[in-house]
Image 1 (spheres, rainbow, N blue to C red):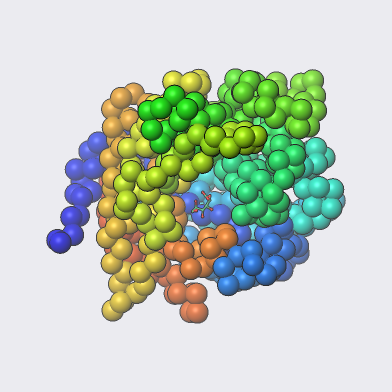
Image 2: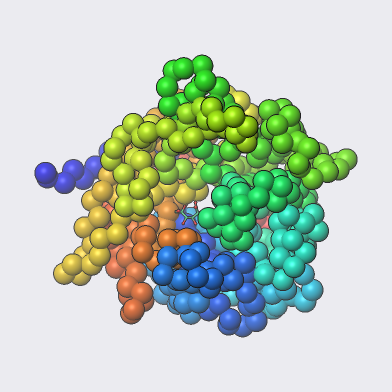
Length: 469
Ligand code: GCO
């Protein structure tokens, strides 16, 4: 089969001139230097060092050694021609104990990072929490303890006071669905709990922490666009039966509504409250007002749809669903169904149900594990995946949805959480033995697309306004 190479120039024509093309990473997944310059363990250091939790007991001790290769990697990002870089800040570098003394060397690293981006003319999109909770906070219960929300607010305030003048946007959380449900109910991510009460406490503490951080960020840097990155599930019913249709609605409320509701409507879904409310922590006066403060933008991380059927088991716990079969049997190497149209269906659905601000696709990408052959990586399937999802994004823009940017996940292969280093999402290959970076075929194609921007007709996208505050 001849490889189809979507013409980047034709695709570029479908995007406005100030649309941002970027790449994304996260601290724990690329930095390494787990014990350098005052950093103390996070819950992911502990989790990945336990037998049976992460493939091959891989951990973040070295990762992509980004902490020691910062300038080289910033040059790599610049060479891709992207306008923006999405990264996360490691709380355990800033407050190694979660609270208590500030670690100046930790903040110094992020000073160098944002200064390096500014020097290269690349916009800085920071995420405050990408899952690396300081392990010391686990002693109070981690995200199940309300006190952690206030510790997060202090971390957010300190970090934004120091770096906010050189950021173009900040997100409080990355994918609360993962740090709440995947981590406290399904047990797949740190801290590996399988307990609905713990998960419901982590849910409200996370939402509250988001609201407290928004307040602190706005106090420290009133003009800095603040948002949150969510991985909403586009839920398809496994059949047209009323039972499966109702199951899909329950799944939407459980997987999406528990974040979109408090953040954009100031209320949890009634279905969740009636089914699980008694097991939730107290929702104190003022919590929902804090959580639902208006945001400047939100980020959507999309990879694959969720397909559910009704679980008729007597006494099945809410949302009482079970997986329904894939419609497209083509999957990526991590086993996720490839279904680009679900990105469009998702954006249309959440915009129909909530009043949402500007939107960035803060993560989209594909896992393919092919390696380097003769100095190159032919990852045509990843190129096709990205091109197809960008085409859907262009459709959404044409329909009037405020899609402002796209960040390829990921800049480089990295620590893929419970899968360790065996699963590769990068548009740049990393040889973990030598730390050599090799731009893949998809990365070279993405570079030719990104280099067409900006086209000079800047609009109201994040970062366009004055950052002098
Ligand atoms: C996520 C995380 C990333 C993952 C990526 C592939 O969205 O789960 O933000 O850290 O590596 O999504 O799973």
